[in-house]
Length: 332
Image (cartoon, rainbow, N blue to C red; front, side):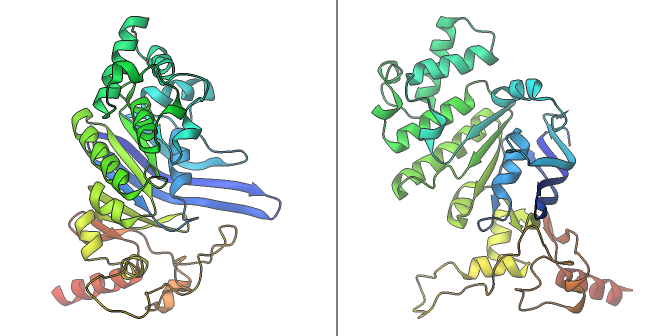
């Protein structure tokens, strides 16, 4: 669609190793519209951060994009050389990482860092870039930005540093923002402030946001849609309310059941038995079948594709396929 700021088609990320080929992301498809926040959720090792790294072109060698296409604002970027990709980062794609200290140079004032980024990507002189930097700090909720622009990263609290990183991500008015666990290192009250800021900025700037997290609470409060990943694959994607309140895939159902219910006096928390398979040896069929309490015979040998379960809600599960087939047969 013309209003999509990001389109990912059949993305596959591989890591050749001495022990074999590790497939970190396998046939992933999704899109993000302008002003939309898509949450990408799953347990550690599911491929969430790897998907974000592939989009922004920061895969660590020997990692590589083995197949698929990535388009930002209608421009294909997965096949660009590093010299071109470095221009895309910052201009078309902004990034917000988990630990703001690793994103900021401790030896430079935040003003110098913002001005450097702005001057690199926008046709502004030094004075105009500085004014833009002050405007960004004010926009992201930094008090007294005219004074704080001259301070160093260590003079800011964790929450304020994350606001500075968000300002850096927005410096050149990017079409897409990759936010990788942006609230994990912050306390709960500051998390809520950063969540509200992300929502506000996405709507005001019309930037699409890919929010990578393992926290369903953050997804529920922030995202418009959510994609659930397991073993490098998207197993369910749809509107947040639909996926949270009416999950279709057994893995998503397990994730939701594991969230404590404060209204119930349960002795034990629900858990999904087993562990995610080794990415160098993903089993045939559905990667979740070894842990699934409702698996069918074909789950162990045939891989399900994402199919429509409801309006804008897709699931990769043979249980859904079977129900759909039964309904179609009954209608005939």
